[in-house]
Image 1 (tube, one colour):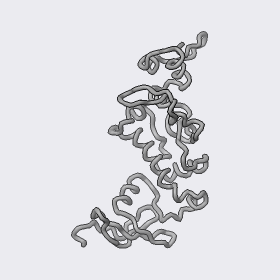
Image 2 (cartoon, rainbow, N blue to C red; image 1 turned 45 degrees about the vertical axis):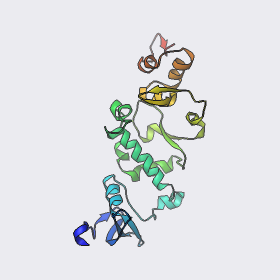
Image 3 (cartoon, rainbow, N blue to C red; image 1 turned 90 degrees about the horizontal axis):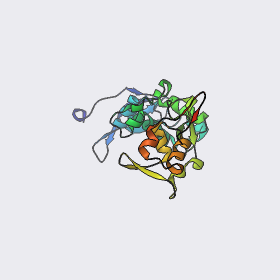
Image 4 (cartoon, rainbow, N blue to C red; image 1 turned 135 degrees about the horizontal axis):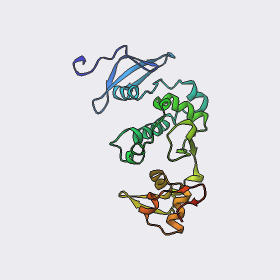
Length: 218
């Protein structure tokens, strides 16, 4: 067995310490037995634990006080993927959405480099399963001061009558196009639906409010 696996006995992954290999799963990947600081034991895949450690996740058996207090044990993984996707589109040039985020200079704040910090902010700012993270200023970074959680009242993009446009090979609604272009949502909506601008002009001509002149693209 030792010739076919990495020995991580005694290694720490957040609150978990590797005790011994338990078994191989159906794809031949090793599942290890870990002991949590709280005393509980849990089985986890080695690959999953290594990835979590690389991403700065403070792994545990599910005993985290924050998770228990706020009842998020079941939705912990979903919140993790919100955090993961956010970092991917800002940091990974191979991500299809990178040009619209990281490529435009949008970044994730240093404090949110660790999932544990993002999790704490999410709970304190009203996160619940089904909400989506959104930046208040589409030209600014992902950080506590610029982010909020949106619910059904902002999810009209999922309705059949949502106005969508073909952009970069995909159908995107006006809110998504606002994110991509950095143009205010209502300005962009007026340009496209009220004033009949072409998509290219609407997304590329800047909107400004000067000292003696107000211009929003009419």
